[in-house]
Length: 97
Image (cartoon, rainbow, N blue to C red; front, side, top):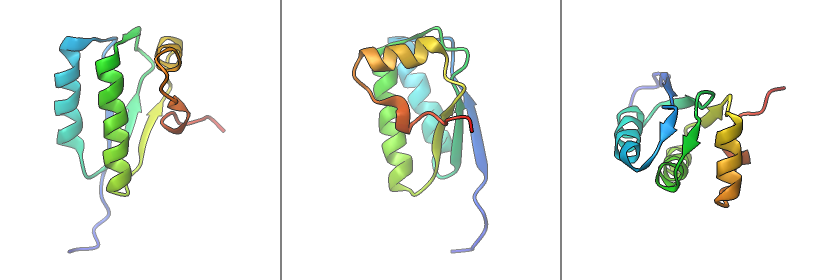
């Protein structure tokens, strides 16, 4: 295996992450698997449990691959909903220094 540095990928989340968007989000994540990933959640207005589960599963997959999976610029709606449904987003969301 070559020691080529893996590219960093980025993904901007849709404003509404509902049941219909869950399979789309899963597909996008699978396309980006294997690269360090930065996710922009600044425009999220609503997130459902299914999409939250897809993101958590993605974070676990990236961790297993020893790649970074960071959610940046999380909107208030994103953070509050994750907290409300009991998902600790602290380890997913990049903190500003």
